[in-house]
Length: 296
Image (cartoon, rainbow, N blue to C red):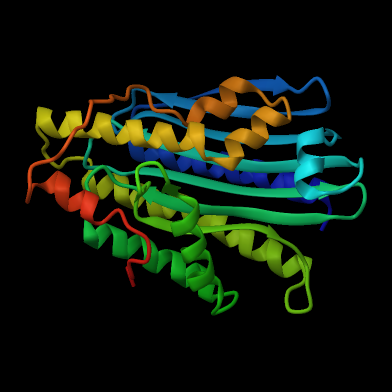
């Protein structure tokens, strides 16, 4: 497949996901911003606000190219080469603390020196961990991975546990999912194999999240649970601003700042030395924000 074919498929993925989310939300509509990157390429940023279920969310497509920034060349330890990168990135922040935050990214990167790879993943960040939802989500991820190789789910699940870990808080961002990066062709997998897997991962997003939206949207919640949601959003913002490599890549490549920071919640709180009551639902959630939990 060519980079143009990959780019076009990602555009179609963005279209399909936006349509499914609008239908399930029932009110919110995506507003589109088309943008161009001065050094080459551009994208379509689509943001939804103040829906029935979704308070704020973004489904972004980009395809950018040009000389590879020095920071990335240094990280890859290679000489000057041009790059091309395309993908879809999604974050959804619901109104209700009973509906989880979700993130997905699927991407392709290649350089003029012949280097190329795929990356991506999906992870779930509940404000309150519902173990049935976590198991449902991980079983969907495992089924997707197992279609391609039995080693994928355990490897990529551990990768997600390690990646989506807020080191300064010593807790995971949520219940994890799968994460993978720099998947290139090798003796076992062709580039076509890798691409089919990334396509399947991307296609999982809409059915999984619309199910979780519909299942949890009408659950009652109190003001104290809403305040807990704001604190958990604060943790989400901390991870994205301090640790997330995608945020850093976007800023290092002079990407569109508004699109890069789309992942941040509409409102988040920080409370000094907040400690949930022993035995509370909040403490039970914190107890489940750990690496290595077997959800399947």
